[in-house]
Length: 387
Image 1 (cartoon, rainbow, N blue to C red):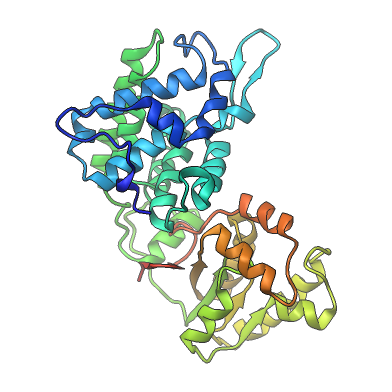
Image 2 (image 1 turned 90 degrees about the horizontal axis):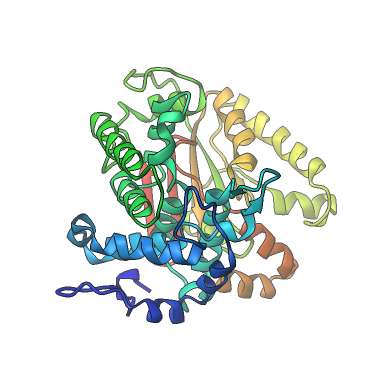
């Protein structure tokens, strides 16, 4: 479903937001009415009241109205979801204050779950619009907090590879205008300073333009201080690391590519070693790494085929490949969650559905801060990031 087809998306000339239609289409909003907020930072009241005010503030902004319809829809969805994580993160502190630490990360996971299935909008969104909304939710507080970061440039440049920073700034502006607080003027000033910094770094409407892929990898993974430095690419070849849920279509994609490369398959090793997917995977991963080291020593390109659903899982593998001088490509295979579950049921060695759902909840698709190249493959999507 293209997000711009939302029936309740405000349209000219009136640009009116039908809040009752929004609530009817998004029942996951209703519980936010029971989530309190700290009266110093949010004197307007509960999270649902704030969300309504943010949505109204967003659609009133001339900058939002100037965006194409599909980007208006992404921003409005992000506004509706930006504080959904407060439902699980809000707590009363010992001093009587109300806090919601970690709500942006929790909200991003909730947004992905809702938009990956029919649960959120009645139909799953494709990868690109879904992750655009998820990452706006994940980073929505950055324009208000970036000045407090010890390595300001690295934080902002990293975010530029996850989301459009001009859209993020607009969401943050609406977030401020949709609340009642004493520091309104200071918060709006922070948003403007964020825009100015992103403009100076040439990453307001695009990811920061590194000289080459190697420079980007060294900056984000190996501590290179100067993002403008031109790193020499001495890699000898490319290793491909697959990622995706069981049933997403990784094996099918591999067969279609006909790469003719050695494949390290964790599923295959589990069969050989008689290890169930729900068992401890330590021995399986160790055997796979031994195979990888043997190939890396010979400078042999290969494919590592496993779920690799989030960065903590992928990082040790990427570091291993980089340590041997390989160029790394991450291929993320995506499909609607209902499709994944159906395919999994039809597999000879089906993973328990509860396990797949837990895995989906931990999923974080890769981005170009992780490797030389990232490719997303899905139904109707085949987007290549990097060169």
